[in-house]
Picture 1 (cartoon, rainbow over the protein chains, first blue to last red):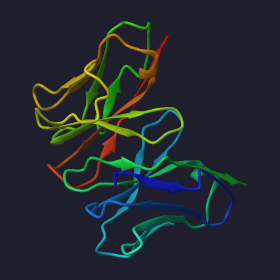
Picture 2: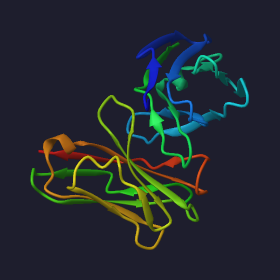
Picture 3: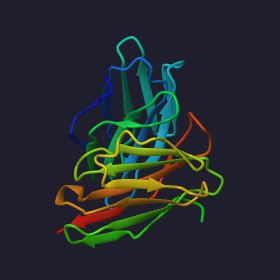
Picture 4: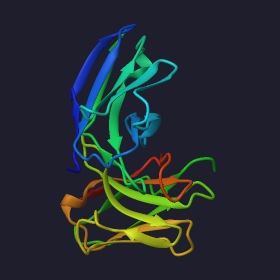
Length: 111
Length: 114
């Protein structure tokens, strides 16, 4: 019930392409779904987040799509750049904000 | 500073030694979290403080792990009698409010137990 399942494990995209990472959750009490970006040797950095009262949120090149009935959400990175190469984690939480993370997706954007 | 800071950034300990890891949250942030990140994995929750009160320690893997935040600001995670399986990156995060909201992570402390 506490798991967040993330796929794919790794992703290779050409520069300018769209990167798509998917997550699924079981716990219907979750009410906050952030995405974090992590570079090697650094802590996770909050990228974008969504609450279940909306189906989509866009910030620059990053978009979260949220499907409450399917208990799934995804991150889309438009016009992917080599600087986007990092590990991306989805997460979910309810209540006081203890985050449950997915296993991560290692994204490589090739020039 | 503007962000969450952690020290030391790297720690090598011999098996059986005690270690103490420090976290300085963003000034004024009420909530503080510790997570453990194994190599190639997502962070896993260890414990949560609201001001000086430790409200959830359900993620601490054993009684060798102990955390405190005595004045509601700086926090210390202590691991006694370290074991090889304790090798991981220990991340600290803080958030402004008591619930709901954005968590900001520090750079982590990489602990290697030899």
